[in-house]
Length: 251
Ligand code: ADP
Ligand code: MG
Ligand code: MG
Image (cartoon, rainbow, N blue to C red):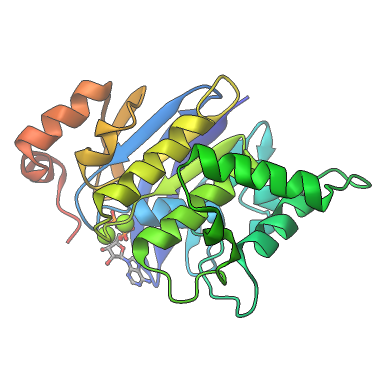
């Protein structure tokens, strides 16, 4: 069992961005990918999500023995993969709670259903654990959300779906410290022997709250170094400059 990425190459409009990414995430493991801006971190998460703008030109991704790349994005989710930006759009008139109920229901085996009472019980349980105000769940999905609120909604979604594998791209959107803590709280709640996690981040600061088992550094579309949590601290001190000199800059 694992999410196994093998020699993955992908491009966008004729430009190679991922240039041979190999990485295996097993249940129980938390991996972090760090790297300078433009190194391809978000591209990797978008390719895993099945974003139509990216063309995979080489390599494979296998989730618990099943090849992922031919699957539609919603099939990937049903296979147990969670990608935080899978529903980035605004859906007018649909509250977070409605949306999560539909999403939770869609993941249940055929013929099973979740009663409204059970759903709200679970929803509030997760919201309380994540330190979220319950009223947040009645807000319309993504409409007028701040960056931090979007993250909250995503993390709540992750908590409700309890995926086997989750890929979280912190993006470089400058999350404030409260949003970082929400992300970290959600990740730490999901951690356990059954879940494999990939945290993508530009900055070390998220890793102050989530201690990953493995840290990988991406530069110019490749993983150029892997190590333990100490690697993140070293990068925080030294910056990415020396790695870009050695392995090429993406820009
Ligand atoms: P990171 O998340 O590491 O900052 P990205 O994956 O966002 O890096 O970007 C990697 C490279 O791909 C950058 O050079 C970026 O300009 C380019 N890129 C990303 N998305 C697009 C796009 N939609 N069109 C053209 N180039 C893109
Ligand atoms: Mg970027
Ligand atoms: Mg990015």
